[in-house]
Length: 113
Image 1 (cartoon, rainbow, N blue to C red):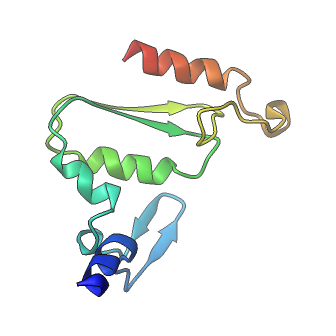
Image 2 (cartoon, rainbow, N blue to C red; image 1 turned 60 degrees about the vertical axis):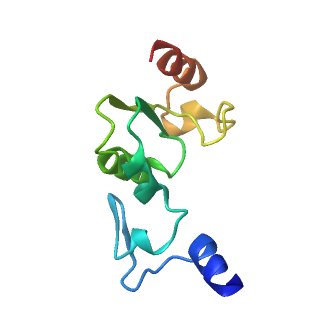
């Protein structure tokens, strides 16, 4: 039982894993019970997904949005320059061309939804 439990919660079958700029393919998302891309299929309530453009979780956020087929009221928001944590990015935003108001944009998007 312990081996089955560990495999279902900490391992994922990815025999042909390929990570590109705009996709993650070759993964059997049904092989674990912790894959968000699979679990959002069960969401039937309104859903807000926020992708922070200062982080690398943009593609997974888009995959979650597409997989949430049972939520009839869903929104995907991109917050320019924000990092994954709920704090402003500490990188010199001007040096990388990002928008300096990222934190404010996140709060506006979340509050308006």
